[in-house]
Length: 539
Image 1 (spheres, rainbow, N blue to C red):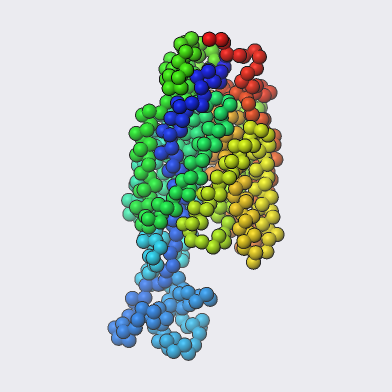
Image 2: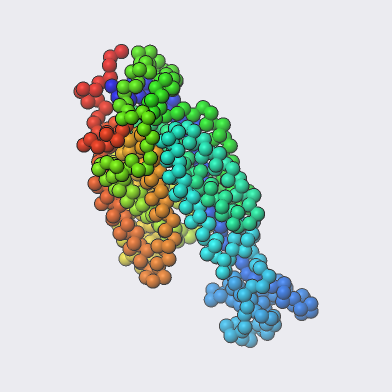
């Protein structure tokens, strides 16, 4: 008898499992809130130089606001005020439209900037003047955050496999709460960047640990449904954050608001069960038995657990060495684990970089930022449906490889669409985003099934690290358009191609048990839960 047999007998997808999902949802809703927060708090509103220094105390003071701008600020080609320059002195003759402003002497803004507060009351760009020469610093905040996410994946993966899922996710909740609120109260940019870095560290752990806790409590038959339900919260709350941002136009208020659900998550943590798989793999069969009895009681299957003792549970997972402490080095010690680490690393890098590459490159919906973000969230829901109806019919491997390759195909096709055909470009871009989201949804489920229990968090931590590395270099790849407009799409296409080919070499996990030990991975393939020699004993 294996652990999956036990889960099936006590209903591996019942009230107990849905309760776990609900307990995790408050922590998980902060993921899209924070990952997309930069789209709203780092917006650069329309601005122009503060022209108070040109006030000569006479004519200038008597001019209207519009006339002051005419004599003080040169115009861009589209007729808008230049955001970074002003005239060295008032050009009153411009009120008569006698000459062009191109040849007139200009200087950089002397006394800061005046920002348009009609849409955003305050952003980090307007508060700390992160415009013009400092514009790159403003863009860097997203990179700093994702570097934190990248490092957090490695740290949380190790802690989760070493000390348990429940204790590790508590540390992530506390880290995110402290540094999330500290971000909202930061008094300078450097402090804010540091706080966002550590917020990313905590959120990374919440992302992968919550997913693993859920799937380790679900039986084979329902893993797909559970995985997609867990990932659906990303799309839903991606569509919710523009609503928050619409009403909270001050960046400090918005940052605090997207952190607030962590307070509820901390309360919910008390009722969250530890992974019984992890407990048994680490020799703590008594506590695992207690949790399994609670699961059976909630799911109204108490009769089965009355026949199961902690001694029986100690045999459902064959532990290689109870005293052994696993680390990232174990990902490379044996041939099949080494192959798995290399292939999944490539796939994660490809899926993450193309997903965010498309998200940063899709434009032309013709609506405001709030509605655009809402559409980006809603368009991901069909991707979840595609995954749900396909992975159990044609298998994880084909779906994973196919979705990555279709994403690359959309990127390739977009290179041949004329620039003036904006609606068609948008349609192909949105289609690519849907396929990339389907690839991401499959990837979380697939990777969880590929890595053994003793190394599952280490494996996902390593994969997430490479995925966030791909996200971090996306802005650098997009800068290649200065050399050739289609070069970024060409690079993303080649990356997607490499990811799709790599995915095709992974083993299929459809209807197979979760591997528990490294030896399970080193064997040729998984077996169905109902193989003849491993039927659950009769009650």
